[in-house]
Image (tube, rainbow over all chains, first blue to last red; front, side, top):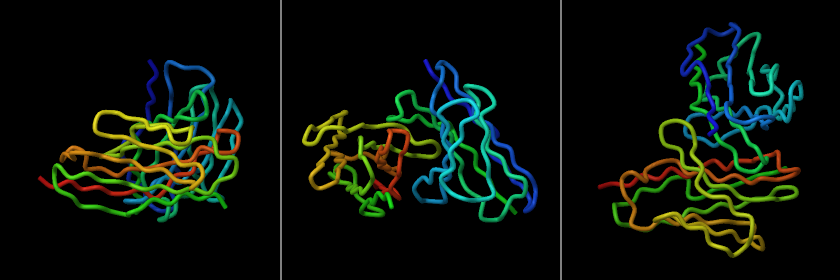
Length: 111
Length: 111
């Protein structure tokens, strides 16, 4: 069966510091991978998606970036965090591009 | 611009009540409609609806899609406190890689 991991689970970072969140998927190959951000009590905003290694599509212009160095690894990064980057970051995978399955999420607080 | 709107924003009911959650969408090249339940952390998948008028059921939950009205409803009968969560709907569109989420409905079921 497929599993998706994210780490860290929680993170508190000062403004201006760098960020690296990691997501890995097991039990499947060549998945579509997604990064979402969820503000408190709100819906999910798609940040990036990837259909293959090195292929990244960005949905929202911002100071975040994503990379997919391996088939089942998806990384969300920032060089300098802003207060507005605080939120709950979710990674998801999909085999068909339809149903998406979510990782446990990373709660990021920028202070 | 692609958008998905859910109503109501929040709902408080008592155990045993029946609730209906609404989701309307306006997206390019609609493919299917997904429902998720989100408690503390990651959303968990409930239903995928592709065909209009065909009800999907899982226990006390059921959902149906109306492509003519560009909408879907999620019904929960005989609600329990464990149904308390945020319910998210998402429209799959374009090449099937894209999900646009609604803002969610926060349901609270009181004993």
